[in-house]
Picture 1 (cartoon, rainbow, N blue to C red):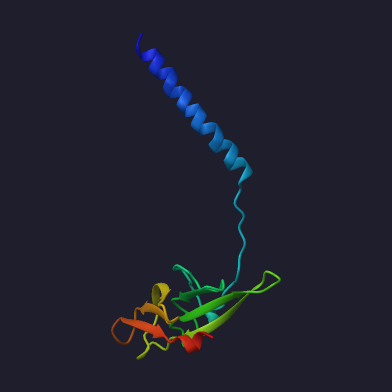
Picture 2: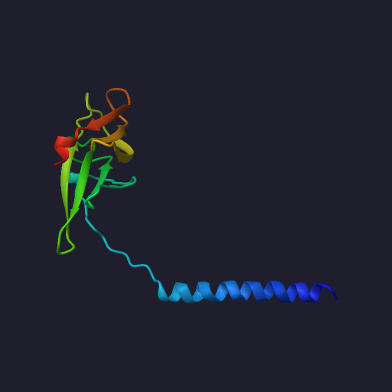
Length: 135
């Protein structure tokens, strides 16, 4: 007999928690929009985290593609019309500059951009793009 009141309280708590979640979920639906479609020449397989700068530009890397096929570092800039424009900041050659960037990119306080590559011809490396090349 004592378990019935506890059961009622548990069901009441469940219902009171579930109803707001259902209402919130129905009025707050996510939308999906493709910002940019890559081609092999400007990068391929951009499958790591993106980094925003202070002005709303996105930075990332693609493991393949570019002029040499060893990946790129790119910037996506939003336009006033909602169209994003890509700028390739660096094309990896697979040589001394590495190749196949892996993981996300980060900025330091001076605005330099850092990332890691998995180089096919040399050893893995940490790469730095100096701030003036990002302007």
